[in-house]
Image (cartoon, rainbow, N blue to C red):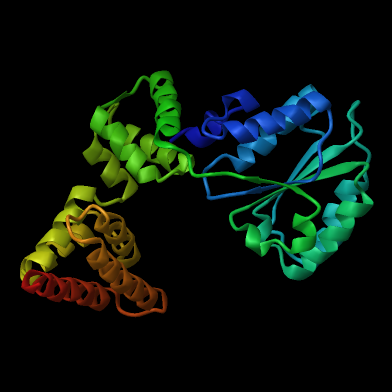
Length: 321
């Protein structure tokens, strides 16, 4: 792949950002005012946090945006010395242009250590005249309260299917790709609100063929087809353990899924089963226990087969009622 489409098609203006209309309107108000407070962007991955920060800087500073926009990834540089030296040096230097301040963007700020965040709090206060801090994080609860109280918090939501479709159709048209209706549905299913995941899946599939269907996408993204996962659950609940284990082998071998991938796919498919809600609660409780054991390092094959065995027994109990 010569170019990464996530970067190639990254919106350069706030109006081009899809699926976050309320946040875009608030950011455009800051642009019109020519000023902004410290900002905190919180939300899941692939929902437009970094893109919004870059687009905001471009619209505020125009041609001078690169000289007035400094970006640090806090997951790589997250110690106390980084805040005390590198970030402080950036904040104290004078901006270029008429705005009177620069933007310091701290990506993945929830990976900063607690000591670094405490030092950052004082830096934000001291250099407010020359610098505005924009921080992005996946979990705002990991940002200390003193920093949250000093920022305007923007909460990014997972993107809706229509927003993902609109964006991907624009890319497909530009790249002269033919994406079938089922293929587009598969991209929305794969994305789960994450635009970056959807674009990467589309690019990987496009490397094989310019006509993209659902089968190519599921294999490119290493995601199990939802109907196969649902079939695994239905066979398990019917009481046929051997057949259910064969269906599990198909997921593990054909799609190359890990145990945690299978657990997540099973969890999503439980809600599509035609069983009472109380029974779904029982199944999800058991899925959660299996997932915990996998995370703790248990053998994934044993845990997955144990989960299927539990579903078989649960299905038998349901028939008796």
